[in-house]
Amino acid sequence: MQWTPQVTVAAHPNDRIIVALSGGVDSAVAALLMKRQGYVVSGVFMKNWEDDDTESDCPSREDLIDAVAVAERLGIDIEVVNFAAEYRQRVFSRFLAELQAGRTPNPDVVCNREVKFKACLDHALALGGGSMATGHYARIAHRQGQLLLLRGIDPAKDQSYFLYMLGQAQLAHSVFPIGSMRKSEVRAAAAEARLAVHDKRDSTGICFIGERRFRPFLSRYLPITPGEIRSLEGEVLGEHPGVVYYTLGQREGLGIGGVKGALEAPWYVLDKDLKNNVLVVGQGHEHPRLLCQSLEASSLHWVAARAPVLPLRCTVKTRYRQADQPATIMAIDAGRCRLVFEAPQWAVTPGQAAVFYQEEVCLGGAAIDRVFHDAP
Image (tube, rainbow, N blue to C red; front, side, top):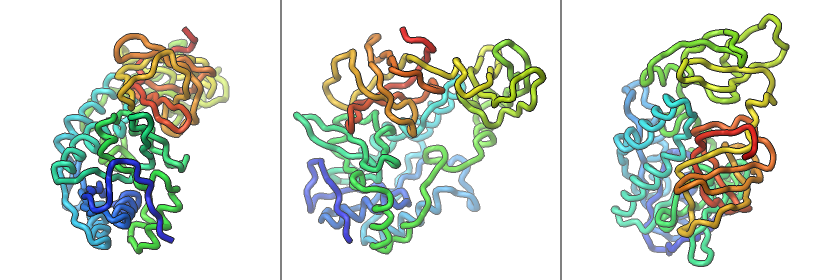
C-alpha cells in the first residue's frame, strides 16, 4: 500500500520541495511522500549543536548517517547546514536564562520558531524551494483567506503544541506530509519502501542536544548552588544541588526520607524561592499549592493574521501531553493575557507554553508567567 500526503499549501508537482531530514522515520516518510507526489525533492540536514562533539561522541553523527542513507535510498540530494550559532544564540541561551530565572522552559517551541521555521526555512527558500516539508504531526488548511494550523490526526503524536508560534508567513511555505497519518502508518510506509529507519526509535531529550544526564550537562553552563529543601512551614528537610534542576510538581530526586511527624505520603515541589535558594515542598499530589485556577501569560501569539476578539472561550494545554482543558482567555494589555480555567489544573509551570485550541484548530498560545490558586 502506498501512502499519499494531504498537501494543503500552494505547492504543485514538479515544484521543488526542500525536506528537513533529521535522520528519523518521520522526516524520511515526509520525503518519500513528496517524491511520490511528483515533487523535485532535495534534503537538508541541520546540525545545530557542536559544543561537546568529539570523534568518539557526536550524537548528531548517527542521525546524519541515517539521513544520508534515506536520501540515497530515495535518490535525492542532501546538504548539511550548520545552524549551531543560531541555535546557541536564539534557543540555548534563552533556555539557560529561563532556568536561572526559576522557570521551566520549552526549547522545542523556540527552536521551531527560530531555527527550523526561520533559519532553515529561509535557507530552503534561498535554495529555490517553493516550500519546506518536515516530519511534524500537524496539518495546514485554508479558511476564509487564512492558513490554519490543525492538529495531527494521531492524538498520541500531534505536535501542533510545539508549532503554535508559527504564523501565516511560515505556514505559507510549509508542508506537513504525515499530519494525516498515524505513527503506525508512517512506520509501515517506511518499511514498505525499505527505509532502514523504519524501526528507529523516536528521539528524546533536549531539542537538538539529545539524551544527556540533565544535571551533569547543565552544570557545565550554570553554577552549582546547593541550598535547603524546606516545608511550607519552614522546616529544613534536606538539601538540593540547585533549584534550576527542579520543576513544579516534581516528585523524583528530592531525596527526602521519612520525616518525623509527617504523613506517609509523597513529597512534591511546590515552589522555588530563588531569593533564598530554597526548594519548597509539600505532601500529596492534590496539595492546594499545586492546583491552579488561573494564570497570566506573555508573548501572546496568534497563528491567524487577525487576532480573535477577547474574551474567548476555548480549550487550553499547559503541557504537551495534557488533555484539552476548557478555559477563557482575557486580555490584560498588548501581548499579555489571563486564562481562567473551568476546573483547577495540576502543576501549571511558569516558562511552559499555554496553547489554545478550538476543536482541531490550534489558535496560538503564550508563555506562562504567573499562576494563581484562585480565580480572579
